[in-house]
Length: 253
Image 1: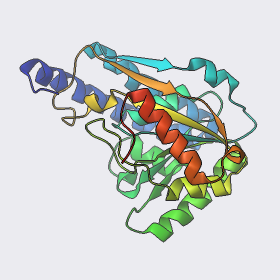
Image 2: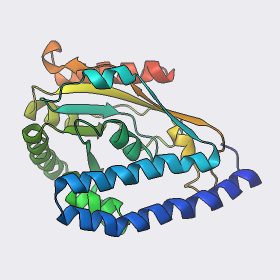
Image 3: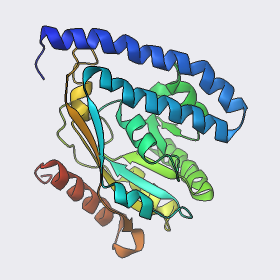
């Protein structure tokens, strides 16, 4: 995305607005946490709604493709959401779209646990898991414990299978270890591939230069039974193929 004076003005307008939303919701999220899980979810969903709708100030529209799938997802089984990762807005987008039945929980990096208003608090107290990518054994143990909570409470575990953000929108090869752990711990889960389109343009310049008038999309691409595939790796390959096809990107080398 080009750096133009108009995009700079857009960034100077939007970045403080986003920061204000996170700061204002921080005490609300803290209070709601102590009032019980239901109130906590209401607070975080309100924050997600605010973040996604705040983009309208720049004429940025958020659309959901495949809405009919959402109504067909079972509410008596856990979900594993497999998504590409493009920006910080991926989390509120997925959290908002799948909020009604399964309250998505995320696998995040440990460095985000502190110093970010609202976000860090919710990562620590919202049944998510934060891992140290350098400690593979410890990360897998943490994901196993995380999966047990997701399975018991019939929630949704969201994994960004690339392992890190694709800042230019081009998919990186999917990593298998975390997904394999989730599948092993939750063999009854329904796997849902998700393609995020155009989100990378929102943070390509770290909110300093923001796009104007674009459309970002979340595509729900179907649902898979784990038992229909010969291995977790085969299932993850199918999810990656679905996402690449949706985004019009070539197969991984």
